[in-house]
Image (cartoon, rainbow, N blue to C red; front, side, top):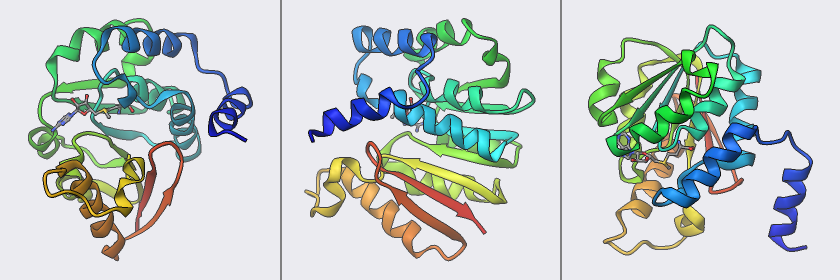
Amino acid sequence: MENNDLEQYILNHIDEEPPLLKSLYRDAYVNLLRPRMLSGHLQGRILKMFCRMMRPKHILEIGTYTAYATLCLAEGADDDAVIHTIEVNDELEDFILRYLHETKLKEKIHLHLGDASEIIPKLDCIFDLVFIDADKRDYIEYYNLVFDKIRPGGLIIADNTLWSGKVTEKAHHTDRQTIGIQEFNDYVAKDSRIEKVIIPIRDGLTLIWKK
Ligand SMILES: C[S@@+](CC[C@H](N)C(=O)[O-])C[C@H]1O[C@@H](n2cnc3c(N)ncnc32)[C@H](O)[C@@H]1O
């Protein structure tokens, strides 16, 4: 069976993508650069399911892009949950706000425009769930910045940790993104303060549970 057939089969047998996210997805593919960065139907439903299961009250997303994943996290979280999401590219602000204003979920979402490395230290909050999905070169930095802001029993989800399979190959010294992900994976593997597992869906999701 072709991988595409299997992917389509999965999408036909899971919860539907909400109409707003379908429009956002199409809009991103027509109007934005690098639309493949957004989480999409399957990963979005998985993020929502994590929120359903964990019922996190304080969520942090590092790397908003279109707010596709932000909306999925907000959809799964309880009404009194708060989602902080950080995006460095302020040219995305109009796109993000246009979709947030289409839904009541915006009441749970706090968008921070700026560099995550500067914004995370200023967030006075203990998080239950953190989704790391910004610059692949800086994953270790984000991880260290958020670690003390996560409660014991809290979860970090790191996206793209298989990086299209490139993690198994020797990276060219100029390929800083692959090297960043490889170093992050090695760092997490050695960290005894956590339990971790890599789920090989899409581009790889690492689940990191703080002891
Ligand atoms: C892979 S996309 C995020 C996708 C989104 N989380 C989703 O799943 O739909 C990565 C985003 O991180 C942003 N980014 C990169 N470096 C950043 C930084 N230092 N601080 C905040 N955002 C950053 C990029 O501009 C880009 O929009």
